[in-house]
Length: 127
Image (cartoon, rainbow, N blue to C red; front, side, top):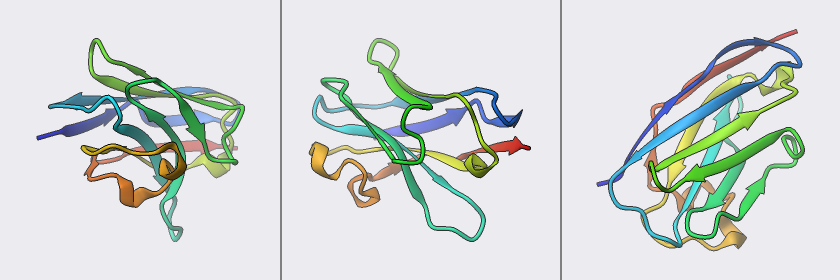
C-alpha cells in the first residue's frame, strides 16, 4: 500500500513563499510519478506539477511555470513543492498524488494516472 501525507500549507501574503511536503510510505516504482494538483472553490482540480520518480524529470502547469518547483528525495521517500512569488489566485487546497503503475511523461498531467491521493492542505494567499 502506498500512502501520502501532505504538510506545509498556510496563509501567506502575495509575493511570499511556501514549501509543501508529501511524505510517501510504501513501495514506489522507478517509472511511477508524483504530482501536485490544486482545487479552488467552485473550480475543477488543476494540475500544478509532476515528477517522474526514477529520473526526476519535472513538468509544470502553465500558470505556475517559473514560480513553482517540484522535487523528490528518494532517500526519505518524500516529494516537495516549492512555491515562490505566490499570487492570490494560487489560493486552493493542494493535493499530493501518486501512481503505483508506470506513468509516461505524455500523461503526467492527467489526474486519472494517479491512484493514491493525500488528504489535501490549504494554501491561502492574501493580497
